[in-house]
Length: 207
Image (cartoon, rainbow, N blue to C red; front, side, top):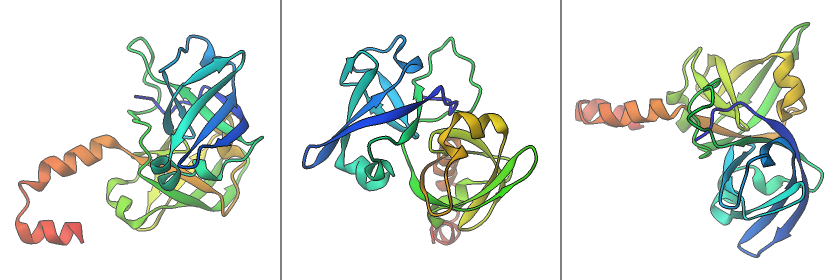
């Protein structure tokens, strides 16, 4: 489990092709402070398992399923990535409950800079729209954010200077792909209520 509060920006140093997977090597500092083999680190919002650590570089294997359903397959050497260690019971929940399980990939559509913040519009798979509400939570590339306006195929978020400076979202441009994870609580509520909806209403909802 994660909180969506990025701890640092890492740098991709190597990508090794394993035919049906890749081995991703990333340099980091903060997240390696108390990390051991088998621990979890979210990379752009995708939970990965540490398989080796050498000095300031750690590696993780990214399976085909993850490559197909996230933006990790587009990474190249030198790219910066958002990193967060799995949350502990002693840590403040500064964002919201994040699993590191990407629900879909969106695309940055536009950016509107202003003096103190920046509004960004991101597309999303239409099937995810029902989980978003105005002022609700969404994870974009591992960053816990508040939805400003939720639409049927896109949503907007406001980025403060801290987020712009400390995460990859400060550099994402229109056309860039981003990982999306919706609020797990919304999915649980939907599942629990499904049994109590009339069949005709449930079919309409699923459509």
